[in-house]
Image (cartoon, rainbow, N blue to C red; front, side):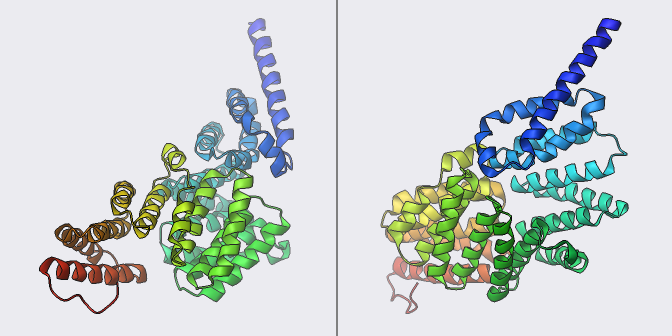
Length: 411
């Protein structure tokens, strides 16, 4: 019995020392230091899981999972770290409300990054309830900001604005400009960009967010907001200014090996070149997206966008058969992701490939199918724009098929 107790005590001391070693590593760790530690990811996982086996170390292990969350994100391994966070949450006693709240906040964030929005909202709403019960205003604000981000990601802008308004009314201005303020300003920028198309307001909030992240020397969120600013400049017609933002964001993401973010910004940068009618440059940019990586880690939406955009560029560069194969790959991914409007848009472009090859009957049939899908979608500026374009293409295809005069409107 004594030997068993002594063995357990040695195990606890060893596990605690290992935890302490990694806790010291993550204290105020700069980006460069985190980069150097990338190969240690599995060692950190092992240290936490071993410590979770000792009841007296569960709280310490839970703290380390939170401290190491930024490290996991730098390693592009938030899905794996989310499992570790969940293990810590399951082991943690119910009275540790503040720690449970922090774990749920991080779990919700990682679910969102992994596009598991329903689970993200569930975790974040629970965190918000705990924070409200505790009267912990900072955690409540963090939860609301992250909930708003989830709602923005899935297009529920009314719910997002409700959350953002709650945060604005209770944000502690005396605390100065914090990362929470930066996240809030970034979300408000998204709202004014996507919901009301108020580009000047969106630019104002993105720039305020950028200023804070720059002062914080944040290597991942600064270029993310820079990309958002590039988006609003792009859609407001300020293409040269947008190019500067997107090119800088690309360089910063590549310098820290942020592979998902790099793929995302290549989609934006390629779209800019496409809008400038620089078809070859657009194709070159889209081809830099690591499609194998996106498929391997399961980024369905981003993969679908990449295939769709590359297919569009290849079509513009005069290779309709090659374009159709890429677009069909994108179409399959949109079906998996569950975005009928995007599915219809890509299907319509497949119809364009048939037009380019003078296969009039297939063009008419494909474009008609795309139009019928879009007609059943909720009305929006984007859907209306796509419908207008597809109707013109369909009319052109019918004229070609029936050998009648072409419509006057340029497609």
